[in-house]
Image (cartoon, rainbow, N blue to C red; front, side):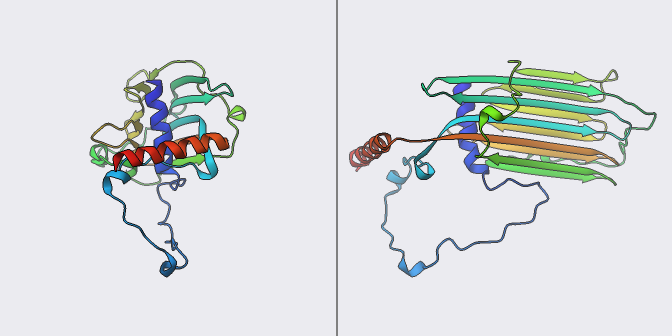
Length: 267
């Protein structure tokens, strides 16, 4: 499972590096890729060669550590709060030794007032849970008034992992909580190399999932909000912190020679 989680975290980070925004963000403005198209010279390359090419790190950097932190929170107008958090930490030290830790927590507190939950039995939000997208999906379905819902993903290359709050400490691969009536539930689980978080309330559903890729399907990150009520405050947040280290000149040469030999053999 550890290797699968490392693969998912590293691979999906590149699929989401341009996504560090809330779901309601406007479409980005298109930017020309090249200043002078006429100056570009292209050389055809066979598809069989392109299919097996590996990516190159910017300026010879390699990923040496990953911290993934998923947090979902739902505040109902009657004072009930449901929270679920899952964290994964994978760090490589100077001796190339890998340390993997996980953590999970879930809680349901309240209600603190006599107000109702704000759920609207005449409203519905559905369908988003059946959506299947390769890569990244952020879906918000809202039916009601006075609601606040955010799907947010943050990718960070600059913060040293040693300075981050260590949420992956209890080595618990799952956690679940609910209120006495069972109408509000919070859960998080690590399984099949992925992570899943879910909050269920009378006013809707909030989920986050990271699913590893297979031979037939790419991996995915999915954030879903379904709110069918009034005055609900809901948020899904995914933080992906990456630590990079500079590759040595000898390592760069070795990788270059290896790839050249592989391409020669395939031809």
